[in-house]
Length: 243
Length: 200
Picture (cartoon, rainbow over the protein chains, first blue to last red):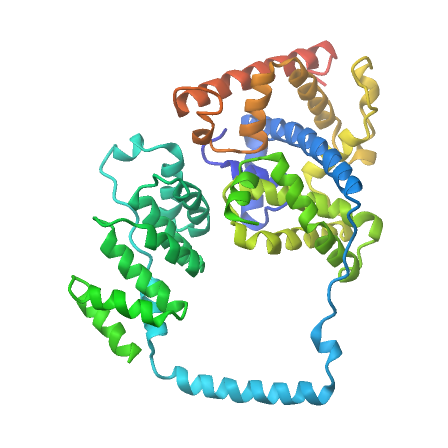
């Protein structure tokens, strides 16, 4: 395949999911590059045939299981009387005012969030070293390096499920989960990092994740430990904010 | 969906696909019918399209277990809205063309299978090429068929296929894929030539 058009773009084009400049660029290249056109044609023929095969199987499956549509629950707003809705709106407005007043003061969660907002630097690879890594790891690290944390989290989670996953994999699975808002999952990965090079970094990011998820007591224990390390300043700032 | 089920689903396991399909059927088709006013007899079609699209995205590593249902519902609604705008994807037009073919095309003159462009929404060039590829695929070995399905159709990562195909490393899989693809392209060309379609 053309090296500058990735597999994803081709699939999105076939599914009508490309728009704007991406679509224009792809169509322009299709006109100019017969090799890319041939690649697209081959994909479409194979994919359509396979989809059709799967659709027939799924239709049979639905018929056998006698599947039927379910009516979604009616929206709550339609069922509650107007006076309750008005009271709820007032309460909401008062809460918003209270929250706004509270949020003027920086708290531990906000501070943790500001640290989380800067992703941990990507894995360091010496020249040529990354070539020896398995392709799945290379691909996951590449996604992380380019800031595609959703893809990185998906790929690294799959790798981290192996019982002999390295500490580095576990750490970056945690970090990419943290970056995609999956805080509980991130904590689980950080917890699995074994004592060694990655343990301190894992404790640090785990403490931030714990604060974000409201587990302040557990976070405090980790931050107390981190006061003895190079992260003393940040740990103490967070401990102060927790008070 | 558990983490383990998601791994099976995103590595192309068809049993996992069937389980997912059954699990979400009621919710998504119900939503299409009652909230989006999709005709009841078409909801399953848009739902199935969406499930296959979600599976595709999951196999590409673009989705996670946690956001699967929301993405599925969005994809199904988008499919229905595209239909309202009378749009359809290139992939869907290929599927419709194949769907309209008679059950056994083996003995039939290929030219009789080509339909009017307006009726199928697909240029004759694409119809011919699709037929030729599928005939070529029938002539290919089972191993090659499976490898091309895993790599081109499902877009699975080469690195994850080393063990499945008993090859030494990723390079071995890439070389085998290129070999199979070359064979398919030659067979496709041969079918096109036999039908006098090459320079049409």
